[in-house]
Image (cartoon, rainbow, N blue to C red):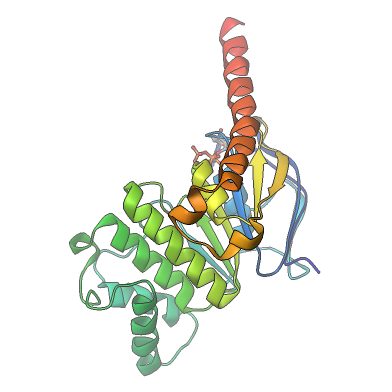
Length: 264
Ligand SMILES: Nc1ncnc2c1ncn2[C@@H]1O[C@H](COP(=O)(O)OP(=O)(O)OP(=O)(O)O)[C@@H](O)[C@H]1O
Ligand SMILES: [Mg+2]
């Protein structure tokens, strides 16, 4: 059985159709990346799966049950650092555990363990304003992992970071995903990021957002490779080119639609 099913999902905001006819199945333990032009409905899709809003038509199933609201089975990492500014790194990770009823003493130990997992040992007592952007995003990732959700939903979590920090967090995320077996739905603008992280890459159309094509990404013997060894391989370039082409057509179509609308 698929872990997640989008079944004929549509989402409108008044007259405006943001998503239409979304049919998508995601396997348990899969790393699925969603790419698409700005405004095509990627965040809307993730909000629906997170249970933060409801579809206008169709339904979303998680483990065979219809999603009807947020739940601790899904951890969400937003693009902007959604940390509590008055709490330390440790306190922010513990916050996620309070809701799950983990006893106080275990909370502290668990928070330390997950801060260590994202490479933040020694920074437990810092407040968000005393951390770099990359460190804040690591705290957000640790927070969403600590209460052990089955599914990790990530909305452009690395977009605001410099290239080096982004690449090291990508490697960390791959390592965490491989060691925990979580199902990950990851949204990005970055084609390289999509090819590097995704087992499949769903490319969306704009206006209304639909799934245009789902590209399976496999590097055969190179699947275990990290960093430059993978990024510089010919297969990597081929996937990047394929997804670039799919996206490029969409961006061109969106611009054409805009021109036509302006001419009316
Ligand atoms: N609450 C809302 N009310 C009205 N329109 C909305 C609302 N939320 C999103 N939209 C519209 O739905 C469309 C999709 O928005 P969404 O944020 O999902 O796009 P996106 O693909 O995440 O874009 P980006 O890549 O820029 O983050 C946009 O045209 C947006 O203006
Ligand atoms: Mg968005």
